Length: 282
Image (cartoon, rainbow, N blue to C red):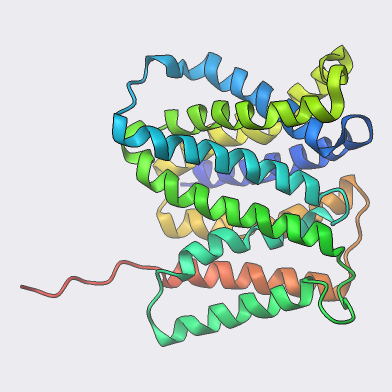
């Protein structure tokens, strides 16, 4: 189990490292251009590795697959747009409310209300409400929450198409996401997107943000219990904040750290308590 845990932790670090690198592209091609570059190059990498054209897509799954890809593209675009004005750790915490909401909707016990309250408390602190005690830019916060909403849609549609398409779902979804976002990136950055130095940096972002974590997560999913996988994944906002502090010199306030800790605790709590209920005998 330890190699699988290590693989998942490396995947989590890799994603946030890639996000930190992507932020360095914003000054030259904007968040829109960086998103387009990442998705286009990630689609090329995954297509070359997994050859999705050999996959037969059942007709009933074609529309959900398109929605899955659109959700993925919008999620990445909104997340990068949030990073223009919101610290990485805060953006990831706000975005993480999307998958957390998907989990919370399935909980039924009264004790689960505690996790809802904890997540709501973290959200209330991070959002720039009233006197903006956490110092978070409102526009950036809304982009992060929009990314979380797209992430929730991505999860729900992924559950629908995943059992049939398997690993090809993410590859095909990334291709669709690139088709959606690349025109936006071109409209914003134009010919800058094909400058050799930017292509090289974009390839590194795509590698760390998509190719490496995608591969490692597949390894971890096959070997880890769902409880362990979900608990470790819940640490992502805290990991993002630590990496942003080291690479981007983004220092969070004690209030922001407390809010992130509340959201992480709520995510871990829902993971622990989200267990299948026994089926009553007929």
